[in-house]
Length: 286
Figure 1 (spheres, rainbow, N blue to C red):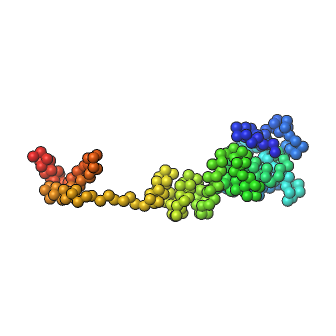
Figure 2: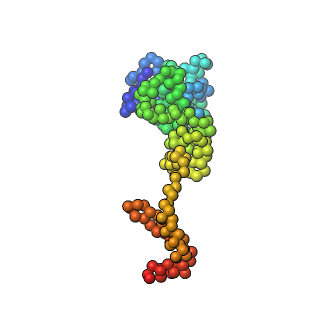
Figure 3: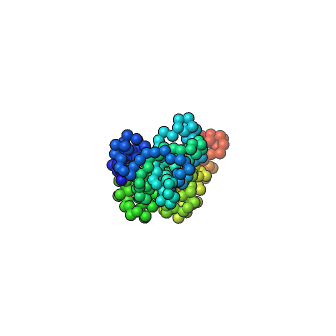
């Protein structure tokens, strides 16, 4: 597979697959060619990890294509299901926009790729463009691991992401479907999701995050508070309570004493009117 899996060179390797004509021609094998293909002969790939296509974004791209044409070829492979058709490996968004722009054919790089290579390239292309939601990215990784025997270490090399990133994002798939939908829709972030993942009531917390617009840090604090339960109230010793009562009786105002041992403490006198404040002031002066 002519894909540079070095993390620093991964983008350059992908660009050669996606339509850098000189690079493709200089390194191409007999299984690689660039051509123009009829829109009608192109089909989305069942391996495409991306499931959500924003209509506004597609329309904006269509306007750009009308003005400047489709600058970058899409990447396809011959269809196994329909002879003469092609399966889109990378560039489905451009294909959709080209249809809106009413193009009849678009440039494409054709490669003979197996399913593993196709899914790897589709994930890499989308991840590098930040086109995948965290759930779509996680589902793609999971499919590579379960269907094509990829380990997290191999995935890390292929997609240029750390092993911890891959492990953390796959864990999102253990959340209830309703929360996965919230992540896909952008209602909450993957950071929010990780914070509530081990909670006993993740769905209720997710709703609270949305309703109160909580930050990830605030969510983490909320989860910690629920785990620890309400803070225990430290009872005052009898001597402090007795002194509070005597001062309250003497002043006729509520008095509260907070004693912190060797650190000292504070006395709080609560007044409800300026007359009461003046009375306390006179007492202190005397």
